[in-house]
Length: 267
Image (cartoon, rainbow, N blue to C red; front, side):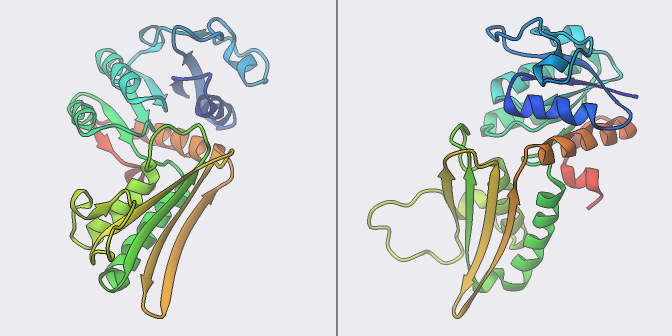
């Protein structure tokens, strides 16, 4: 039985993760944590999602939930994730990270744990999205050099980072297939008199509104035709189920290192 702890348990993804754990065979929720100002401290995690008592109280103390046979699933914010990662390392536990919006310094700190912790880190845990990344690499190799490439993404009004982690993953997949560095060829803002589009760049457009779970399209536009590869999520359970799948895979591997969802799926 895989023992799992969910951080940010009172958030949208936290609740979805608890649901996914309860609905997945051979997984057990053994802890659920929140920030110290949450009104749900002490509430049973099952009641938090309307599923009745589970015997797991919502807590602020992650360390108290940890042991070497426990895996944390963390979809929070960068500062919290790095604090959680430190606790995981000290306990000899493992972690699945879905937090987005980390800057380069924070990413470097995260990577520094790869010799101490078994962890999966991905911008998106959807099986469909990770399949889409493979299709994008194929398209980029065939038509990328002769196309103008744009990444368009849309999310709900509450999302705090842009572009989304998934959009960046898609841009990096395309750039990598073209032997380019997204940091050098990515265009993340346009305003005013921008001039003609510079060849070889990858543009990003961001939409925020309503309750959009997540929609991503990569457009390869050339003279006379365009190819669009899209993924649309209609439920957070897509991401939650993928994260639980990653946690089960990580427990089976049980080797320190920094892994991706593509490792989990065997791509």
